[in-house]
Image 1 (cartoon, rainbow, N blue to C red):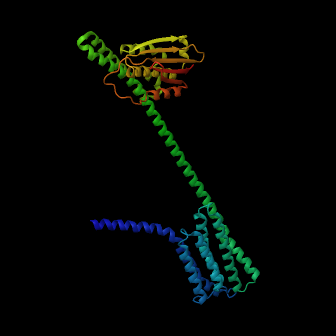
Image 2: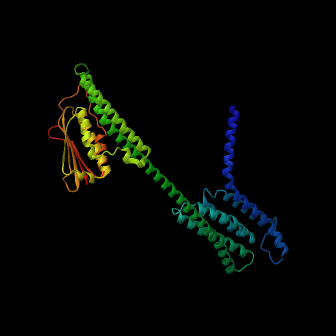
Image 3: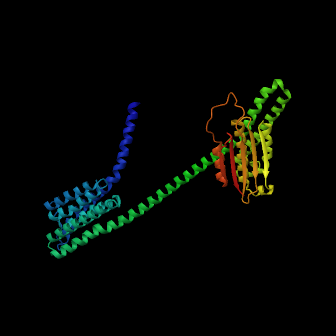
Length: 422
């Protein structure tokens, strides 16, 4: 079985090598067959017309020189892809060799290989880095073809001036016209590749935008989950700690704390359900969010008080000014207050909190949440770590064009001030 498998792999490698070799060898083979056939037929055509005597006789020395040179042209032409410019000059020099060897009109048969070499040189040379080298090679090849043609025409008896003119025409026809056609094809190919590269770049950019949008949505989801869970779970943790202390000495208080735990759990489930609804139906953001607004802050304060947090709430200015704030900014302010109260309960247990909503400004509403230093420190308090609460509040403020100022106070507490444009 191993031998069979190895044989299959070798066969596949041979097939792939043959597949690569066929396009490389096909033009030289075709050129050689064409020139050989014409080389064999040309003497017979000359013999049929006694007025034409420019082709060497079949089997003569000049004929064999032409056969060897044309065959060598075809062999060299097989390397046109690896070294296009040297191959072009070599196959063009073959016309000079044929002219010196007395090939006569057979010298023109070398033009077939030159045409293929010109095409390969123009379409394969990396432009514009090798533009000068390509121009030099084309010019040199044209002069070689012209020189070979002029020599061959001189050998068959044409005047020197006529022979040179015929050489220049032959050189221009063999070099210039194929080069222009190849350059046109090359330009169209480059334009097509450029369009493909542009399309791929656009696809990559679109993929990057999609990835960024997904990352932004994930961040928003994480922020919402943090705001919802942190607030309610903090209250639940505080109340369950009270239940543990009250269950033996104050059963009635313990029952009340259990009811508050149930209320907080129900509220958290309701808000989580709203978030899931928002994710399933993005067009129903207002309904899914529960319409949290600045007018709902009193109920948020009451929930915090029932959870054991000492909070005072005050509003300054007309309540109608609060309705001028957009729904997204109101939701952002509500979440910011919610996060501040949760942080106060978590990091400053027993501290007194103040919540002030000031709408007296002509073009802004200022929401201030301030808490004092902690009065007690739980024995099992975890080590301080950097969370996402402040980052989330800042992102919400940036999203709504608000200004958030947060930091410690001189008394050892913490203050967050949110300026909401009206």
